[in-house]
Length: 198
Picture 1 (spheres, rainbow, N blue to C red):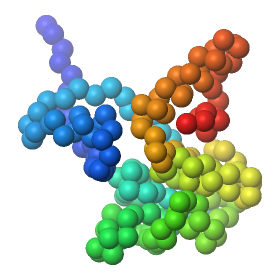
Picture 2 (picture 1 turned 90 degrees about the vertical axis):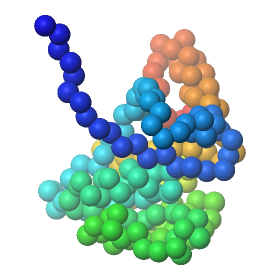
Picture 3 (picture 1 turned 120 degrees about the horizontal axis):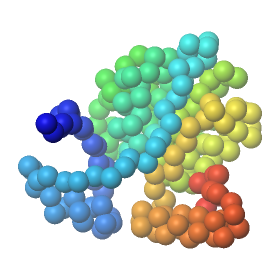
């Protein structure tokens, strides 16, 4: 008797953009109904329920992290503030409140680091958590503010640099692999992904 895995459905959101990256070329070659294989995902920490301990959860996301932030906001109680950075035409096109039920939705002004600039308007207390995803240098600035300026413990700060201006994901993967190989020669492991220069 053979056992078969339970069938399930998974929705994967992909941000379509104009660059000719390997992902966009792959996506252009697909048609509805195609079967594809996936490996992954890379593990991402979701915010803990800060509300259970009297704190609040804050989410910051650009367009690349919008689907993740929306899923977290719908699944996690205690999300009080969501800051999103979208192209101006998208932000003006309508309200995205339905994707973030119960949270105050704010739009970040256009800049090179919109999320970290918008974050300065947030009142973040000692027991709060911050989850952020988006352009790497913007997210690096969010992380520095959380850890250095606000003194939040690392467990309360989950940040993910999804992409980098002027670089492809292949560039990022090569930089990470090179850094890991060098650390392995030294008998060390990569403890901080933001320490890798991409």
